[in-house]
Image (cartoon, rainbow, N blue to C red):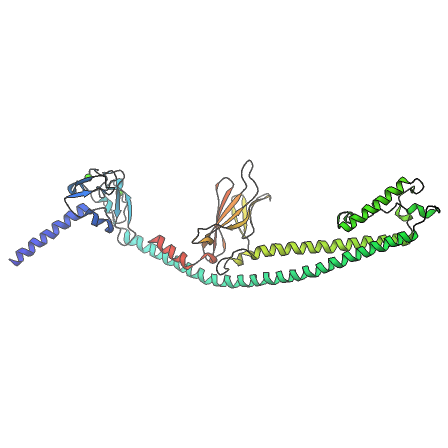
Length: 426
Ligand SMILES: [Ca+2]
Ligand SMILES: [Ca+2]
């Protein structure tokens, strides 16, 4: 009796299994509960209720194809490859029994004229090996990243020191500028004083009258005319003097020759000229230093990542040759393209990070490059990927005037990249 019961049970289980295999073919585990044998089946999109016998009966009943997960009856259906040992995935159900092995476990060709061998284990092994290698690379990258962070800290320190040195130089130059301005004013006052002292009156028109109005307009340096307003004021006076001189027939000298100036005035003029030249020199130096300070401050204001892991890139430019062009990326500065005859085109200046909110350091944007012929200004997007070297991996021009680059660097490695790469595989 008991044996008989067991036989019945075994038969029931077997038949259920048989029914199950037929019914649930092409379904993932999570979907199976929706296909439990009942009287009727509700299409996934809720559009129709059909008798359960019409599930996988090789006739498409549901508009969304959900009644035929295991056959090719619905054009929009999908078949689930279990692929044990590898990655499960869906294929369009039109590929079921089409004579081509699509699932690595061969399950899509269950009633086919061809025999598919199960390649899942082999594929899985290969993939695990690749993944392991990639993990190793990420770990190595993370190790290298630490060194780059240290290198970056030194560069950062250097820039800070450079800034305070430049600021000190600027302060000194500022004092010098003031000092040289005063010197110039003194020289001018001295000259004026001398001029007044030996200026002849109208009654004694002699040789000396020739130098009047000959304030060497042309011999004075250009700078003198352009620089401070003080000088401009003086020049105005002098010009007036010249005009007065010119209007007075007695005083107009025959030739404007500075050599005819009394030596003492000539010397005073020389002193003014050299004071002007010296002032110009220190003013130029001051402007240059100020510009360097501005540029340095701009560099120091850039976001170099939570651990300043990208600072080291300030001292690196990377290159890649693609057909007749050489592309150069100087991170946080600019991107250029040089052709084989040496002419260079700017593909963009550093604009900022472009990555998504959760990982902003995955992309850089360089824009405002040279304009294309009859087109927009060139721009470049650089994607950063984890690698054991800091180098360009690819350069492309996906659309006109827009360039994309892939920069691999250990600085882009993170535990997240590690997780992401695993996630992508599974
Ligand atoms: Ca059907
Ligand atoms: Ca197939």
